[in-house]
Image (cartoon, rainbow, N blue to C red):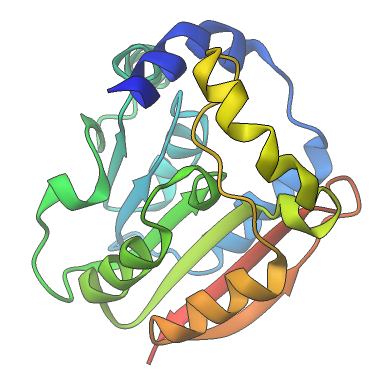
Length: 206
């Protein structure tokens, strides 16, 4: 699969790259933890090198994190071992590969991932399916179409040259419509000052 090879190749560089804003990252962590308890079953898809998963693990009962990149997950497992985060499990694959039962988890995180999927809307429906009633979906998504709609024409060339992963170019309103269309109620909608093309949503399953 071309996508996993791309992320395998840049895994170390990705891990070493600083976040755009430490303050905004800490706010995202805090927003998530508002919805966690020590009994929470949490799933994160597109977990990358596992930094967020490891930081959240002490606040929940069980944390399952999935990603398509084996090398990203190698780094994630090393981080978990160093932090002695024994309740976090890293799994290679997609959210669908987990084959979780209906209404079986309390929270799902999809951070910096929805714009990288070939099946965004189907994934949102799957998130809704596996969440318990009242469960929460927390996402942070690059909506490149807000200011760089022309970028959609460069993506195919970038993919052929191995310089870009699959990237869907859409606007924030399109993302919000998709989340609502999957059956969610949006509780928080935030655009960080440091990342004006990123939409952070907190949505619940009614």
